[in-house]
Length: 112
Image (cartoon, rainbow, N blue to C red; front, top):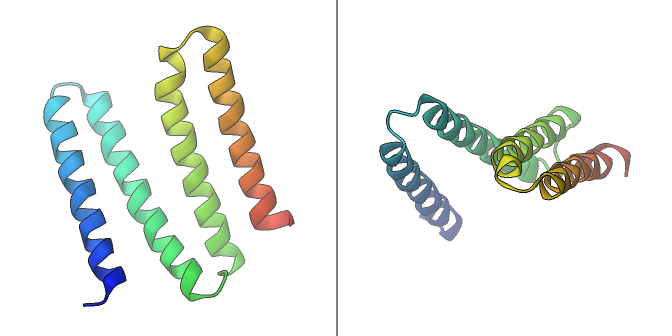
């Protein structure tokens, strides 16, 4: 087994362990469990798209679109959980940074 494959398996094992512990601690809160499962699914899909992106030497337009969409989804998901915990001005800043990140990613993938 090469080094990258081993690191990938260790990373997925860590993600699975962390997710199982988080689901266990949020059991009974369907919204939190759904959020965890959706975030995990998006992370796994993102990993698969990034692997395809790297193997194709920059990937095709559809691969770049999938990577951008998944990163934007994850950014919005986490901003939606963090922003309400902060004062209104800081929450607005979280959303502004999330929007700037999505716009910057779009520019880097499709316009640059």
